Image (tube, rainbow, N blue to C red; front, side, top):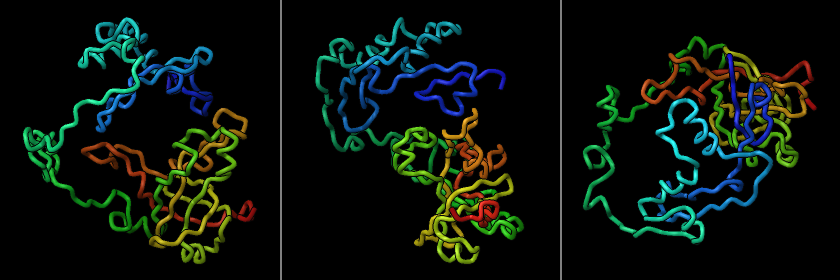
Length: 294
């Protein structure tokens, strides 16, 4: 990457590698029209509480950047005008709206009886006419991922477990909040859940440090025995990094489940472009260098 700019609340591993870091404002540090995109009908003025240093909202940054790259006609003089634009259908400005508690539009039920559903045909579409027009299968189907016991049985012989990577530990949001002391106290180590039968087969006990390995790489996490699933399934936490490791990468590749998953274009979903984050074939074994137990 020749040039990288990062806007973030904290100095993350990505931010430390950036050419420019822009301190961004949290939701408490900016004015905004709250929840206007949801379906409950309420909107409320989310008033700025405090200014921290030079922090600015993403909206303000983009509103200033747009004219500088030749897109001035698509942006406003300042972002307050952007808030006025959102509120314009109600005949309000931000200055007027921020003095109010909330507004709720008129509630109307069974709208589909009068104007149909929000589809091109105005009908409830079991088969998607949008996908069909794009040349894709309009019906939901089960398709084996590119790497699975069925799609790649030869790989499955050497990597007999299916690793999913969607666990969301409370206190973290993807890679966020790893550097906050009390959230790390809640979750000190990255965890991989393994069925007790699979653990016994591999000589793994609860709390052992283990290595999870796919064709693309390997990581280390601490094992946690968890029943209630197919014994072939491993569930590894993702987005792990370690603030206590004092280098710009902060150990991002030591326990990060992204090391295991496939990210090439050929393996992505052809219609949606999603990568296969839930189906990496892998093997798991005790981390012998550390004795596995600590």
